[in-house]
Image (tube, helix red, strand yellow):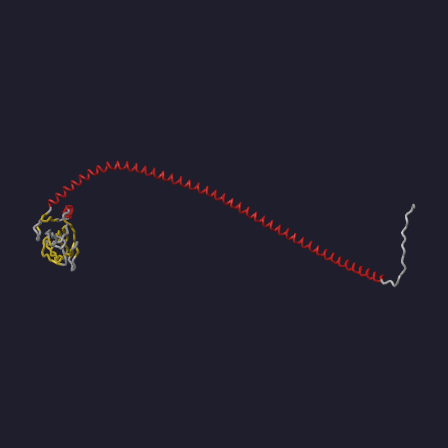
Length: 295
């Protein structure tokens, strides 16, 4: 019992016709054909999968490349924006510095202008002070001169007054034809000026030549009708208040009186010179212009 016992196989004898073999072969053929079909399909799937993977990989790479490009463009845009912002910031800083510098310059100019104006004002004030001082000195000198002049004027006024009084005293008096009042008569320019200085009446000088039209003297009209220089006589027509009165053959320095509606006292015409076709004299009118019909 030192060696093992070998099994014994007994092949049974054929019992009849063998139909299983063709069936088995057919099954094997179908199995092989199926395996080949599956292999072909698997290869096709593998090929398609590989192509899809390749396409997917290419698409992914394209997407990644586009993302990279887009990212680079975005980065570049961001960088450009940053550069622009920095440039604007730098420009604004320069502008601000320039504005500050200009403001300093303007402030300095204003200070210098104010200082200049102050100096001018001080100079002007000093000039005024000097002028006032000089004027005061001059005024003091002039005051002394004026005092002397006033004394001289007083002397002259007194002298003139005395001369005026003497002239008035020497004036001729004549009684008018319309009232009993004796009027002072001036026979020349000096005496007429003395009457003006006396101030009792208004005086208007005239020179009238013989003419068809009258000559206005103050508020009246006077027309020379006739002149006789040999006998110093004349004839005139006086128009006052739309009324005309003729004074015939009047003498030299004779007061010719007539009334007007403006005064209670009569006006007077005095002729001092009679020449051929011309007379020279004056009109004396009352100072108070009151109608004779008034109260």
